[in-house]
Length: 335
Image (cartoon, rainbow, N blue to C red; front, top):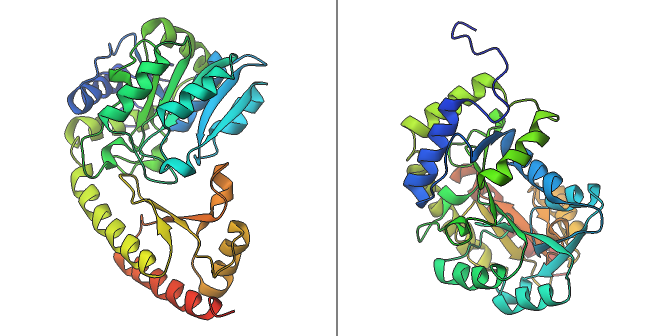
């Protein structure tokens, strides 16, 4: 209140935050967006996903969605009367292959957009530059939008994150934010970037849904991006230690895992000697082992038989969880 931050902000966000966001995207990922015409601040990346899909979809359109994936994109697509087209990536290491993309596009001429999320929730898998170039070569041949949710970009472990917006700038609606990079989940500030002829239409949706993101939260986000642009470095190093610990311990118990490249999740295949239905397994583990996991079935085709485990907690908590899982496996695996 003393800083006069209690009023409405512009629908597309404060100038200060848009400029900070543009600088952040440029310095981190070599992306060039005009903060005046190509950046919109959203109510979290979730708000950006809603705005993007709502803006471009008409009834009957199809949206390509590689799965397993965070389920948010699916109901928004359905709300617009459009159809999600799932591409199960469980047989290709949880990354979309060029052949699968090409084949799906061939049989779905009504495709309006493809959703990409990398590093992925729930698998932690990502795409390197070579893989992205292969996908981009195919997507460039089609008049479709690429909605790229890269909210976990700063939590990429073993290589620098590459955005598909570098390869398909005219087709991509890029989503990012401060929730994961700066642990500001409750502030609800996302970043949406796209060519100005697209953002001019996206802004209209926000104008009549959220009016504007919370003003004082935008000033906090600008401070984070301007003076804490490398805050994720230490956080990432700690997450990597936790990833390695959970990965090694679960592998030793018989869980099959595609080692995560980023984010803070392990997507583990339930051992054959345990309950195979992921919902039943998650419930049983919670009841008997006091460990909460998310059933893989929640993430679409290819997720059944797996569970998502988050390591976004203290090492002490993770050690307790692993201890309990070991006891659960020892007891239940005998039956």
